[in-house]
Image 1 (cartoon, one colour):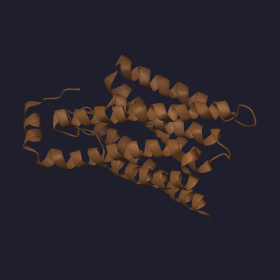
Image 2: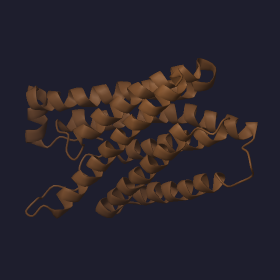
Image 3: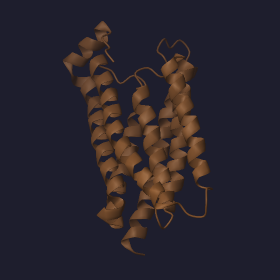
Length: 233
């Protein structure tokens, strides 16, 4: 087994772990919905912006995986599952908030997911143009994911609370990001740089969010903001 296959297998395993993290977030929403006497919203403090961008990140990796030669099974199938789970989170956010923005996000996710899956069956091979498009999409999504997680971080800091944000999701996705960095390096920087760029960006934001779980418990500023109900988004 060469380094590519080794790190591809490791990355696939950690992606499965990250799927458990995304499902943990979804399960947190479901538990909050079912909790009796709970006055808090099921999706309280979850950033619609961040989850929309997370969906696009998973979907861009999915399309990138079947756009390159050879077809990268290590990237394609786990990311498709992750994109579907995040789409379910977007659906729950819309059900909870019933806003036009949430409806737009979940509709966009559903439409993009269908189109991306159909792309698997268009022609026997994917053209170089398809690879360039998917690579450009990953670069764009990297910028968007930095902005999206900044939005989630700002919500937590301004509220002094993590709300419905699930810690395990950040922990599991961070593990996936670290393995993705190793896998991208095994592919060679020329081929794997889009994965490397996005994984590093995602990993840094997860570290910040994990730190904030400690910050909200120990910071006098966080306690004061929770007491006064300050929340600026």
